[in-house]
Length: 159
Image 1 (tube, rainbow, N blue to C red):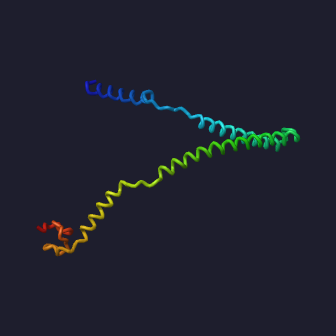
Image 2 (image 1 turned 180 degrees about the vertical axis):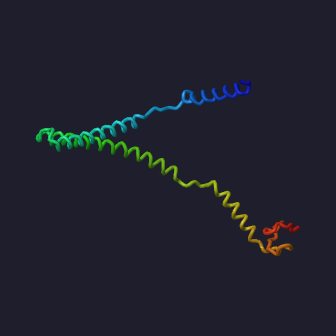
Image 3 (image 1 turned 45 degrees about the horizontal axis):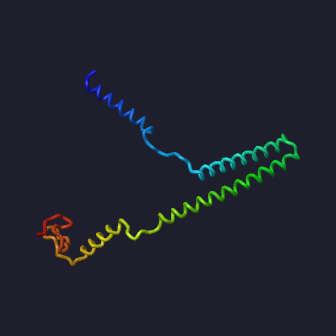
């Protein structure tokens, strides 16, 4: 092996090592806020209760549970599910209010728009182009304005 191929292999090894070790050097915070944690726990509990209700309905249809236990268990699950949904509505309502406030702030029109300067330049250019005709091109006969140095059709110098 010659020296060039050794350097190439070494460079590829170093680049691969840097790429693989990049997550260890980044300082990203993956901390979850208390509100997000509570919301996640409530959603998991909601899903658990829905699955329990589904299983209870299935067991009742197969007559695996006594007929007198079914209404009591179902009422308990429905009541607990209603409590969870009320808590979720409260938490999500607060989150939605905060989100809507941020969206409203982001969507407020600015006094200056980055395209305003460009629009002003375009309007000035159009005003200049509306000048009176400067005659005709001596080569092709196309119309030219007074500020033209070259014919817009054939490119002949008009000076």
